[in-house]
Image 1 (spheres, protein in one colour):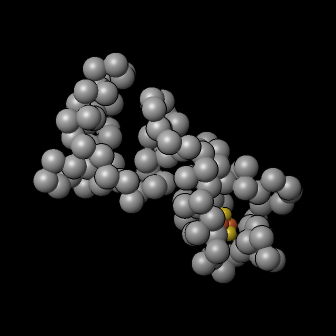
Image 2 (cartoon, rainbow, N blue to C red):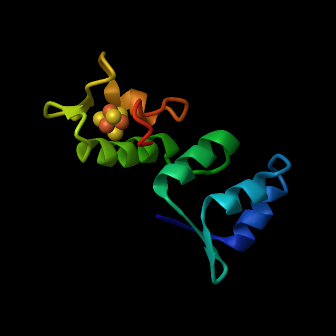
Image 3 (cartoon, rainbow, N blue to C red):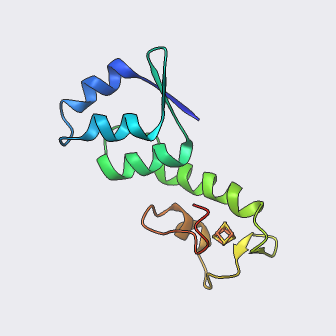
Length: 105
Ligand code: SF4
């Protein structure tokens, strides 16, 4: 989980496209002046809106890898997917445009 100050998000919204703040707030849980976002959603929003995010692609790949490790469709030691053939599965997971064939991420 990622914890972000609401005041920092409001400040960032001044240089982001219209609708940024509403979309970001809707993606997580607001509590006591902070927004809590899952790593996966944080990474997706970083890729979508840019900014000074910390390694969104690697965070996204790690979050997705955790899901794949527990999935009955993962195969072999590297937890590749039985529905996705080819090399570079880690790179495939790190691209926000790619989706799990079974809708798990
Ligand atoms: S079905 Fe989805 S979660 Fe399961 S191994 Fe394939 S990509 Fe990963």
